[in-house]
Length: 519
Figure (spheres, rainbow, N blue to C red):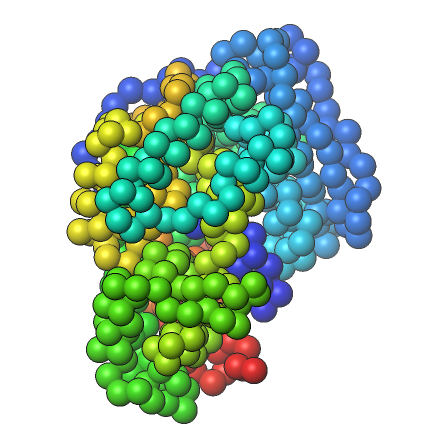
């Protein structure tokens, strides 16, 4: 994929991982196929021009698919027209993940690159899932000012007292979401979005769906394929979620999400050491791992100055962990991350602190709250708010790097979530599609570990796993011409790679040709 695509997606995607443990059974009944009852039987999408080859629309869907003629909500939808319309195959739906990231923005900003993956032979369609972005949104505050006041100064807790205060804050947040969010909170599960996706398929006149899902978008794909297996033409799932664990509950979902992050960070340390000081400045201080361990021990005792941050501040232990979240997923960032860690070892935490601040800003907290609302609907927590600190302890034992941070930052509200979604899908996950689903698993992915892809390949009734021998969250973060060729051949010709195929990345992290030069 082109550099522009990699850069665009890096801004659009917030990763979330899937999880493990034993199967759960039972599924809410899906609406029957074919035409929708009542007013939904004859609707068409009213597209409007909104850019070169780009069309935009709002589409009404039922709040509750079991009552299709009841209250309606709206989805924001974008379509980029195929560049080879005379050889058009159909529509390729795309989902960037999150949950909660904007499929509309993905098509509007990176549609040309996705068009190239499909050989110019698909109209590319993306939508903002219900509850998010430009669609009917989840709201937990009655005003933006209220949101800012609630989150002002919030930080990931480090001490027992801070943990108790943050636990109460998370419970209050869940209560506010229940008060303000209303009925929408009961109808934002991935199964609800899968039914929205199938409705869009019908409106666009596609007999079967072609779909590209990334990160959480793979769970949307897995859910769709098991609800509507006969309606799948082709499905590419990159950065695969383990659907059994995702549906099981918040604790298992979190455990999977952090289970591979320490291993990837160890690879970062090892590759930096091997690259040497000319390509990884952190290696100039001696053993890389020993230096980072000393930095962590120092921060555990006290923050270090971040005097060049704007405004000046300090870097805490949990801010460091938070600052590692995005660059660990993006190996072209590893030389820059190494330079920032080197500066912190020298006593200046400014660059790392500036990485952490957007994630704990009111906007950042709001984004993870929306994501949590969808995940709480898919699989609620099995431990209540008062037990959540013990859950955090178990997560920290799984991953010192991300366990506690992710447990507090993203998903603690699930422990107090006020509603349940009766339509959520809990399995089984073994439906057989007409053609194999193509799974892409990156060997060293910190958010959706490679084990997820292997597990999903065994669960799904008809799937082939393509191994991307690279680093980062999603294959495009560590580009591989081999993966790109396989995606295009599959989407256009339904040609599946031979089982056991391994695609190497084009470059190793810290290679001079990989990523932008340091300033």
